[in-house]
Amino acid sequence: MSCSLYLVFEYMEHDLSGLSAIQGVKFTEPQVKCYMKQLLSGHEHFHKNGVLPPELLLGASYYGVSVDLWSAGCILAELLAGKPILPGRTKVEQLHKIFKLCGSPSDEYWKKYRLPNATLFKPQHPYRRCTIKTFKDFPPSSLPLLETLLAIDPKDRGTVTSALNSNEKNEKEDADNKVDEGRCGVISPDNKKTIRPLKLIPEFELNKQMENMKQRLAHLSFDLMSSKEIKERAKDDIF
Image 1 (cartoon, rainbow, N blue to C red):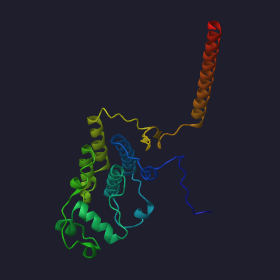
Image 2 (image 1 turned 135 degrees about the vertical axis):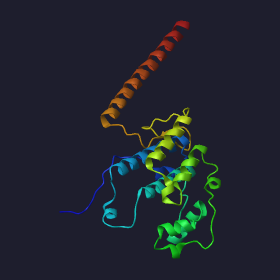
Image 3 (image 1 turned 45 degrees about the horizontal axis):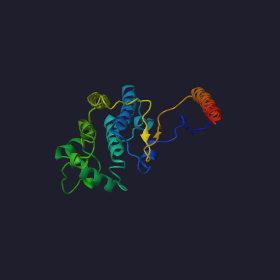
């Protein structure tokens, strides 16, 4: 019996990473909200139903809801910035970037969590939090959620439900920016067409649309021929 695990997903022409790598593509605020709502809704389902990776249940290092929330915050910032906000090649470099952006943990934090590697990675010089200054060009509605999700202390990151409520509140405030969640398209660099990575059309529906298009083209061709014939006859009548 094979021990291999295969994950089969519906076909997508693009993923977020691929789209963000396209030069000239920039996600709009409504699109980012749409993606974040889907991401957080998935997390909320997992947390409410107790779905966690088996290696964590078998005794791996502490893993909680706050880890997912931190990841969601990083993804939110990356979607808005168009690039990773905390790229680190090593553990030391990664922590250094986190502390520079989000501020150094307080003494209370170190005492409370008693992390095994605290003596190795505790910064010698304290850093002040500068997320608001760093993300000053982000949509204002995104900043409160980012501040919460990228909190250094896990207990300050809230819950997935609170993050979803924050996202929905911002959507109501921006009622003019209507987003169809099933069609979170991205404007291509030429601003002429839309790439829709999350829009899946069933095959039968696609065939139906193609058939309708053929019929419309046939009628259009007939109308053009009729119009040309009328002009030719009118020309003969005049001359």
